Amino acid sequence: MGWASPRRRVAPVPRSPRNAVVWAVLDAELTRGPAHVVDAGGGTGGFAVPLAQAGHTVTVVDPSPDALAALARRAAERGVADRITAYQGDADDLGGLLEPGTADVVLCHSVLEVVDDPGRTLAAVAGVLRPGGCASILVANRVAAVLARALAGHFAAARDSLDGELDPRRYDLEGLSALISKAGLVPERAHGVRVLADLVPGAVVDVEPGAADALTALELAMAERPPYRDIATQLHVLARR
Ligand SMILES: C[S@@+](CC[C@H](N)C(=O)[O-])C[C@H]1O[C@@H](n2cnc3c(N)ncnc32)[C@H](O)[C@@H]1O
Image (cartoon, rainbow, N blue to C red; front, side, top):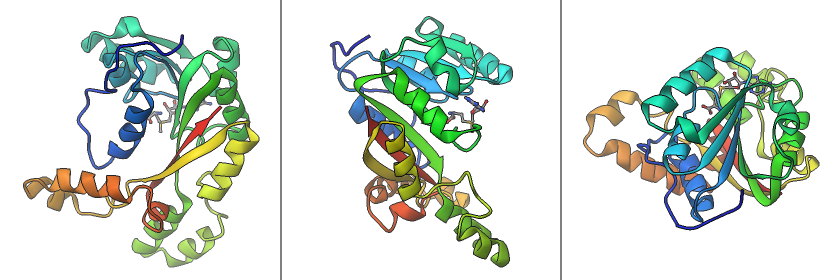
């Protein structure tokens, strides 16, 4: 499936300080009309369902039957079950489930932390993308894990995790970019996701009128700016095939 008219925005979902950056990147990528989106490890459909609501065709591949059952319920409630196809399976097997080179966008969100071999998973992601298509890759940031340990008073653990020893499945931008390049994709843009959202007390955001919107605007403004980007809870890379 290729790009088609008409133009439409991506997702009728409330943007929050936690998810606004990723949705903004997807918004910018998906302005050319209905696309075929593959959500590798898409879970309960937090992205798949809004994308289907926006008119895209979504294929979710996830090994968890519970997650897929929740996805099916959510898709039915929102009236988009016909636009979502779900396979119970491993992201590494995308190539066996889908036609190679046919996806416009592949999401790989919070999955490289849990798969057996992140390099193999990214190669599978690259394999189903059409030339010019893009992968949206979201991972846990090692820097944020170090800071979180230190702020919780676990100073020795924070020191150990400085060199990545405690967190082999948390990433820095350099390591993630190298992994993406090795899979045959070209990293195009990098963002920090949740630079402040996990640090600001919930009470401040929930109680102050307009605070959530202001924090969302701040997250969007900081997302591509080092050093703010580099301390975010998650790192997001948009990579092109
Ligand atoms: C933290 S959740 C993220 C869900 C979703 N991508 C999101 O961002 O909301 C991780 C997901 O990866 C799935 N998962 C675990 N191992 C996987 C694998 N080998 N291939 C694909 N998905 C996997 C889990 O079932 C779960 O749904």
